[in-house]
Length: 73
Image 1 (cartoon, rainbow, N blue to C red):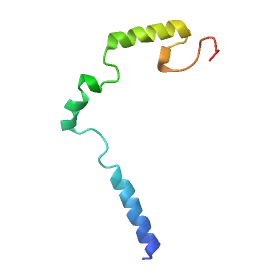
Image 2: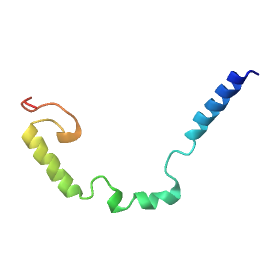
Image 3: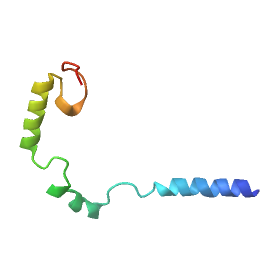
Image 4: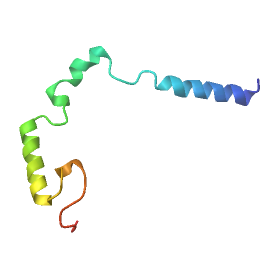
């Protein structure tokens, strides 16, 4: 085989092998479940913020997606 074929094969194997360990292992789940690792630490406060944003922007869904409001960004 030529050198370029070998190099291409090695690069393809490295790329495929680099994604083999993506994901959360069972022993890592306890760390990710802690309160300080959550995106919203207080669900009541997040619900109130969503309600205020929804009311001010007059948009459907609040900060979940764009649209609505007066369009004066």
